[in-house]
Each structure stands twice: as C-alpha cells, then as structure tokens.
Amino acid sequence: MADCQMSGRETRAALSIRWVKAHRRGTLHDRPDAKSEVGMKYKIVILLVLLTLLNAGTSSGCSGGVNKELANLARMVPRESTSFLFWNVEALGADRDMYKTVWRAWESEESNWLGDLVGIGAGEVKIFARAFVPDWGVVTIVSADFNSEDVEKELKDNGYAGDSYLGVPIFRKVEAGGGVAVAIYKKNLVIGSKRLVEKCVDVVTGREGSRSLYEDTSMEGLVDRLPGGLMSGVERNGVLYDDLEGVGMSVAREGERTLVVEAVYKFKVSGAASDQDTLIRIKNDLAEIELTVMRGTCFDPEVKAHDEFVEGSASMHILDFSYFDLTP
Image (cartoon, rainbow, N blue to C red):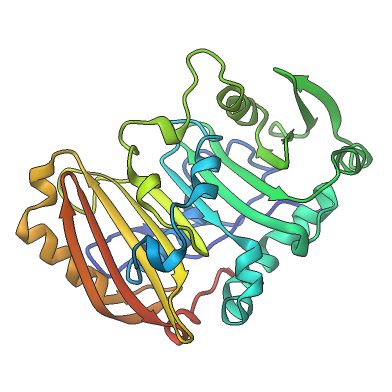
C-alpha cells in the first residue's frame, strides 16, 4: 500500500503574515501523530494560499450562502484544532480553470494514497478536509459516495483489522510508530492516528466532555459567516493583528475570469475590530499577495467592522491564482 504522503515546501507570506514553515517529507505511517510539524506545515501551505488569497472575497451572495459543508465538517473535529481546511473537490474538478491548477495539484498529492488505502478514486471524492490538533497530529476527513462494505473489504485486504468504537466502525493497521486508523462515519472517512480518530468519534457521537471546533467560543461566528465556495478554512491565530482570535476565508468563483474570497477576522473585543489602523492594515494586506506558492495583485479590496468581526473582500484575476502549486 502506498504511503499517505503529506508534503509541502517552505512557505512565506510577505504581508503582515510572517509564517515560515519548512516541511520535510513524511508519511502518516511513519509519523502517525506528526504533532506540530508534519500536518501543520502541509496545511499551512494551503492555508497560506487561502489566507493569502485573503483577497478575493465576496459576501455570501456571490458564493451561495452559508458554508453548510464546512460547518458540518467543523462539527466532526475536536475543539482543540488550531486550523481546519476544506476543499470542495467536486466543485474544483468541475471548474475548468481550477481543475487545471488546484484540482490536479490535489490529485497528485492525495488521490494515490487514498485510492490505495480505501479504493476510492479522485473523481469520487466530494469533499476533502484536514485539521491540525496540537499534541495529537493531523486528521483527514473525506466525504464521498462509497459503499461501506467495499471500503471495509479494501481495508481488510490492505491488512487493516476491523473494530468498533462507540458504535462507529474503525479499522487500524499497526505498524512501527503506531500506524493509521480509518473510521467510517456515514458517508465520511476519518483518517489519522488511532487516538485522534477516536477523539473525532467522541465528538460526533456526543460523548460527555467532548466538543467540536464549531462549538468553540473563539471560533464562534467565523464558520457561520463564511459563504460556500471552492475552498474554505479557519485558523485560530493571534499573530497577524493584536487581539485577533481567529480568521476564516472562503474562495469562490466570481465571474468568467475572476475569483472572490471573503475573509472574516474575529477579535477578542469589538473595539479592536473597529480600530482604524487595523482596518487600514487589513485592507492593504488584501491588495497585494506574495507567496512562494502563489503571487497576485488583488483589486477592489474592502473591509468593514461588525462588533468583534472584520469582514474583508477583494477580487483576483483567475490567472493570478494559476501559480498555485502543492508539489514539493
């Protein structure tokens, strides 16, 4: 069975975002609990694309209303998650421009190990999401049309032993370093280390004392303010601006040649959100993006404050997004 590779490249945001993450190649099999370094860095590559794409954001009217899929999946990961990224793989594959860039990059990074693991092809995946949980590692959630019996058979053929946890089927293959576990929950596959997969099951089954990222007070309002789209993400982060609790973003198609992303910043207090210097900085940061994985100039950036939230939006020409690259 092929390794579940999660790789990235050194990434840098030349805005007020100052993230530099070096990521060495690794596998879920080799490092199931990959803690702060494996998943975070892979994830941050994408988050930076989004966060940095923080420049194309329309409001819910352009992207089709509240992001229900993101909200549903955010209810499946533990509240301790510091970031959560969501790809609408089905929609990306149907978009001729995003298919050439983002979908194919996703396919090259993810579909091979996923197919080898559970027998699901890239074209069958609808939603792909990934959360990073400090001290626990990375968990991947895949939503697809699949037959549970076929998936179970594929896992058993690959040497995974079946079990059950709180009534949810879990398959695990014990290897050096701990191995990988796969839970089958409705039409979702939850993939990661055994203890992290079980932690997700605690959340979805409502085990006492377990709460989801969606229910966390610092994330409250972020997910619900994001519209649906091609990609979305939320990040618990206080380094971009003073008193910032978290940031969310959603990328959508705006027109024939443009993308739009809505960015939502949540501050600890409403006064911080309405600070004019902060609003000017956010607007400037939305106007020019420079990353290793993507560069582009945005136009028509706008920001507005609502209580403890700042909502930012801008537009980007589709060709400016074509620099997106996930390959190491």
